[in-house]
Amino acid sequence: MHILMQFRLPEAERRGYKNVFDALIRITREEGVLTLWRGCLPTVGRAMVVNAAQLASYSQAKQLLMSTGYFKDNIMCHFASSMISGLITTAASMPVDIAKTRIQNMKMIDGVPEYRGAADVLIKVIKNEGFFSLWKGFTPYYARLGPHTVLTFIFLEQMNQYYKFYVLGDTTSGGGGL
Image 1 (tube, helix red, strand yellow):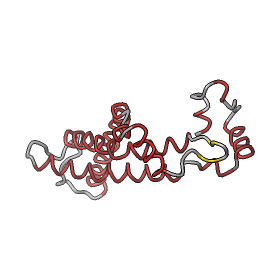
Image 2 (cartoon, rainbow, N blue to C red):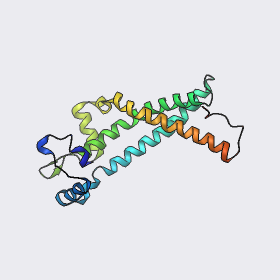
Image 3 (cartoon, rainbow, N blue to C red):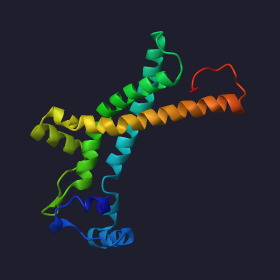
Image 4 (cartoon, rainbow, N blue to C red):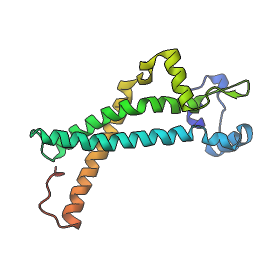
């Protein structure tokens, strides 16, 4: 993370790493080995929220769309379900993503970390910037996560269909076909 962040920093704050190995050695030596894992727990938390929201909302959206009678178990249903899932996942994961990013980018102030953890980040953001600032940048975040969710579930549905047909020999199952 440090390596990518150095290009966003003002020129005076850039660390000037020569390569990834130089960065790892210097970060470990100058900031300590634990710095390499700064933001690890919020990153794991974000991944859990994203996966839980994607899987649950996709299944629910697909079931709901198919129950209307307008959709069959085909690629259009998978596309619409995954777009809905991407929207829900964006809403659910943005606050956790903000906490993760701020913890990864936090500065030490007089030897004390800027934040004590993800909850502290969220409390300070709500207090100083307002509740809805947790979803600031919703559109670009969805523009990134939406297509990812669509591709993930369309590929998953296609692979499931081919597995059922070619491995299990099930010629009766519907859906998945282009």
